[in-house]
Length: 260
Image 1 (cartoon, rainbow, N blue to C red):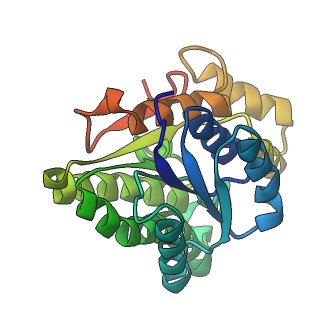
Image 2: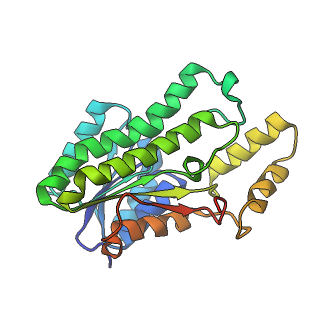
Image 3: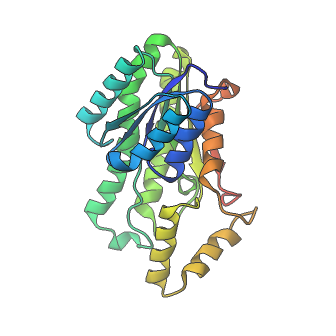
């Protein structure tokens, strides 16, 4: 197993990509703290991981609340005897859909930046001292291909994902001397409940069908197929394993060629 005896924190582990990432890392040997607001939704994931013979502790956490994040990381350090090998920041929000910038409410814009940027920064801030002390660690931030190119009518979301890239690259420079890798995996549209809501909302606002919006995404991909959560989990697994030892400050786009 590529992650035997490794420990980690996953934020946003309850559904879709978060669940696939959590279970994939556990399958490869990692013991995990699963951090999120909806602990009931996380419990089935934790049960699956425990069924693999791995540790899985749920810690109720709002990743935009510094005190809660600090307490969550402290709990992880206690559980794993001070050792935190892996941090994967999955938690995030979608924000306004199919909305031109002049119609975006200020509060909505701020909410997206808090969820996706502050919610990435805080777990990094509080986890890094433990990694620095051991001079070892792997951090993976879930960005998005909307942070690699413009995304019409998604100003808040796109801005937040560009910012995640900035955080990733800058932190990689800060901690490289401590043997800590910091990278991002940037999914395109992923076959999840969130994608269904996105397509439905776009269809509603444009007065067209769900199927039409879905097909537009497919047609815009070189491979003509939609990413599934396991595709993203496989990329994360690579980034947290020793196979990626010489990669840092980088992004892997998992999008079927949408960004080409």
